[in-house]
Length: 265
Image (cartoon, rainbow, N blue to C red; front, side):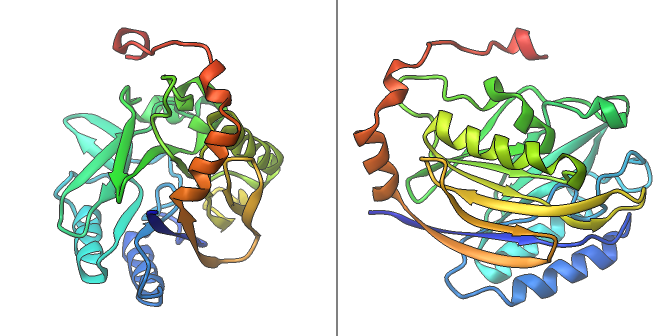
């Protein structure tokens, strides 16, 4: 059965300093084991979660996307994390899914954190991204999306995806919600859930405790790290996932629904 190696990089970030962040992540990625396949960086990994997008935004041909392309190719990995992207006069908190051959997919954060004014600076996305690798389907989302279960919910009787990933800059003061909701998303969607958060204080003095987690389809925590920087690789087995779904086929009793584009634009 298909195996997939998932690596999370929980790290402090240099506030609004692309060059230092990219250099730091290059050094960390060089230390990864040879069997690393999918590598996950935090939300806005090149800058930290800033509400000052103008000086740091770039196009899809910009330095950070080029760095992701080069890093994925050199290390033969899939690399993902979110960056600030500008299209026309609009800014997006955009998750990039970069393949080692240079092809990519992207997801624009749907739920913008109005409490911090993110909705005033960035434009919300309206399409989910479910990537495919080695027979696994992976749903990719960003931070505040975690609070909105409908956006992550399996929408068909047969599961749409196998792994749900959240990249984040989630503050320590709300870490209980982060940890609880990650487990809830795994249980209700019968999938693996991986949350990758940053640590340390940002430029606004807000402390982040990390609490990056990997959770199995039963809601059991396979990995959890708080406060410290850490790099962790877990091998997921498709056979284990399918056994859970076969033994506990709860998804067959789920409500049928769909999210229409006109509902979310």
